[in-house]
Image 1 (cartoon, one colour):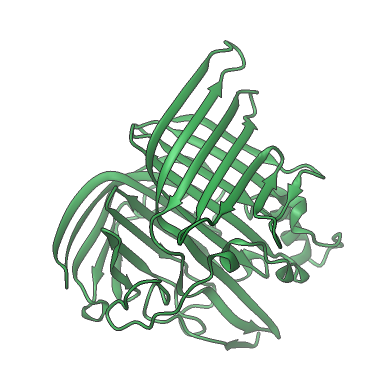
Image 2: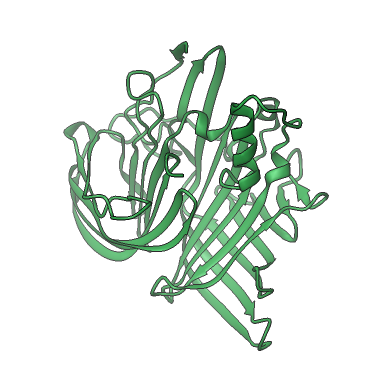
Length: 380
């Protein structure tokens, strides 16, 4: 296998912010439309994927997660296509829309699922943004981007049923509080492998957003309807790549903390080739009062003892910031509790503690509103 590295991930989580430089980083404006719109050129490659992800921590303690995936990389038919292709079996022409899914999940303040639904997109039920069209459509669910000011608004309009026929209708509005940015150079992987230029992109459209949620969930058996109208704080990002994600990635860890004045995002995305070919993507951002305190990969990442069981996620994580990050101190994630598991993927909640010092002074905070993801593609 011939592998040539195309570029290295810079020692900064965000190479681009639309405000003053952070600890000497260069400032480059990011076009959020370029990140948010569909990238059809990648679909010339087999295995290409693209998805829009949003989550909201509501004031009543509820957690809402939304995903529009074209395709879902966990969708069984997508997984089988990759397996058949790897074995040299005959496969139809690849079209990512054949494996598209939309999902809507609501968990209560204890992490208990109130509603969980994932729908396969039906033929004719898919619309991608492009030109003047600013809407992603999968079945009866839509995600719209509006730009009337300096920062965009994202509106998720959900109309979806779970496997038992329970129905949810929702409008969740995300008003971005900080500009869009890309993590590092915006690539979790970028290398030429056996003559193929493989790229995985990650753009953060709103590391912090103000949220208004209006959700109705109707029980099919009783006919009763639960109404949730709450404000909160949210997040929106975007991923896309021009190949099967399994061809480069062994999985990922991703964590997010959201409060009214504080957002923390951390990710680790190791690749199958190891650091000798392409550096492990391992960024962290801390935004406080609209200012980035940290935007860096200059950190030491310590995992706790793996949990017992099939998905051996770390029981805790400690992030020690190196001096070149521009801050001193640690971020600890602990008390992880599984709230959802599907194939190689798990979603967890937990607690966190931050103790850092930056040019803006000391910041010590803690809380229980941690959202944590763990995915291990090596697990069968």
